[in-house]
Amino acid sequence: MIGIFDSGIGGLGVASKIRKKAPRADLVYFGDLANMPYGPRKTEELFELTLNAMRFLKSQGATQFVAACNSLSVAVIAPLADLFETPKTRVIEMVVPTVSAVCKRTHEKILIAATLATVRSGMYERAFAQQGLSVDVIALSKLAEAIECLAGENELEAIIAPAVQKAIDLHAKLLVFGCTQFPFARSVFSRAFEKRGYEIELFDPSEAVADEAIKTFDVEGEGLNTFFVSKPSQVFNRKVVDLFGSHTKVTSINTEKPVDN
Ligand code: DGL
Image (cartoon, rainbow, N blue to C red; front, top):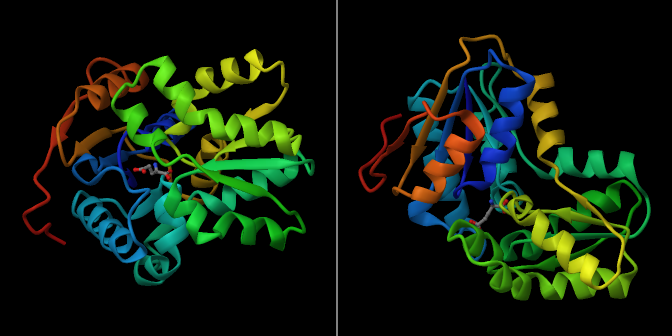
């Protein structure tokens, strides 16, 4: 059973790609809406939230994990991987598969748009530097939450404007969505660049992360889809129905109570 977690709908992009590529994989998803957004949080909090999510998913039968949230992977996955990685328990995060997919694609100027936690951590710069590439990053602190709240096109366009400007100033050829919610605003990014007459490739790493999960994990099961959230959300429910079909149920759990391990 693969346990996938994020602060909200972001990880559903990764989950739906795993589902398409591995129809028999058993998936259990946790969207921590009660604690979203993760982006402004400190490393210690992110560590706790990751631990809670993984313990909960473990209690639901997960033995293999995808932290489908850049803000978590950069801050806490290394120590968590040590805690959880046993021959039976595996953890995949966003940064390593993203960097390796981007390096295969281009060595031209790259801009990564992410949350504040991801930008503060400097993880992307370090990971690209190990591949001999220098990249630029920009924090779009309000974007993930705005997407979760179904903000309108104008509001989203205003939030992403600094990233559009920075990409143009840098003559960037590729803009990487370094937060899993951002690809859900792809059309807003496309239109904003079109309006400026600037051509750029928008890169969603969820496909690469799904490929990594399929390569690494046992994906032979019964094709189960199970979804949990820590706070009910119509937006989350609708996204699950869009991506996984109308029969799919979302259960809201109370994470204030200690989670069984
Ligand atoms: N989905 C997360 C990420 O990829 C975090 C979004 C948030 O809750 O701030 O960075």
